[in-house]
Image (cartoon, rainbow, N blue to C red; front, top):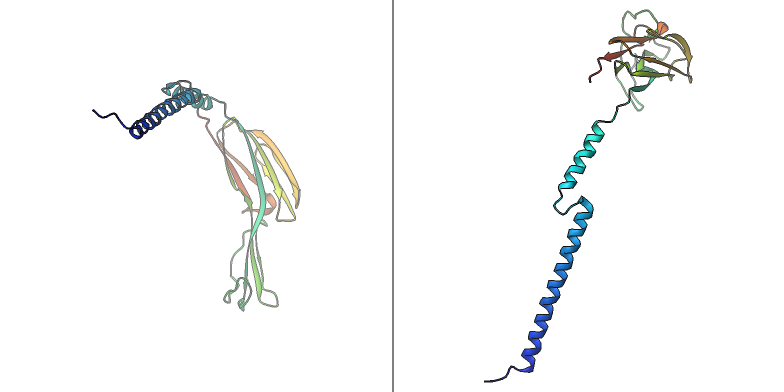
Length: 205
């Protein structure tokens, strides 16, 4: 019987060494992965991770929601420009438009300017932005009125009072919305367009 050659023995030894190394490396990686999972989730099967996530969500849902509501209300106006002869050039060209025979409501909130010598005329409407706010009963509401467009306004808020404001000024009022319903705010010298309302909804438990 022939003895195995030295080359065959060496090759077999190399194969055994490679296999043994792979087994050792795989075992180490498996252990590392298990340790990492254990550190991340608290256990190797991940059950405590699910429990931790559920507890976190429950804690978040149980936190008290703020009842302080704050809003910025701007005085603005919208302008429409037209010309009896049309506007043939410029960024906003337009065809000729007749001056409307409209009845403008009294109050100062809507203005229609007759044509000038060039035929240009203008239509302007003043308004609040925003003109509707929604809160819940019991909320502490803070309103910041900012006069952006318009030289001067008088502003009134139901249950709070009235105050003057001029362009560039900010006037702040605060109150508790203790009753379900509508709280109106308006400008008596810019009616009927500069009006707004605060809708107070019942608080849900």
